[in-house]
Image (cartoon, rainbow, N blue to C red):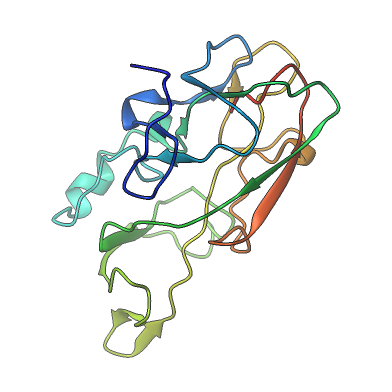
Length: 197
């Protein structure tokens, strides 16, 4: 893939394609691209399950999901001139949704696993402009506010490191922070030369 800047549909200088997804943080991984401070990057990501589910998925598909493919990260992106100790500011410019999503309960998985022991899957359809709430069921409408789930720097310690948990929150890792939305930003500390998420 060329490292030359080009304008994407979002007006970005660079694109990270879904082929640049990884399942671990590792500072030894070579960068997919190098960017200058102020450059913009479009990330063509897959969902949290690495595309194992789709809008036609059923409970059978959910039962067969490979949990080793949960929480992929895209990149790495190297920021030219970034030094250890620098604070990097990353602004989310926009999100381009698929128009559908999914919510699941996996037995033994998550914070409330004991309270929800049965497998469940809900496939959502929603307005791609996010101006209308999504219908969870006939009795529940959910306002939509897309956000970035996993973003950050690879730890300075040799990897690999899990993408499912953040060993050091200052590196930003698995944020799952509904405040990291369009127009907002996230700061992360650089622990090595360049940013290598």
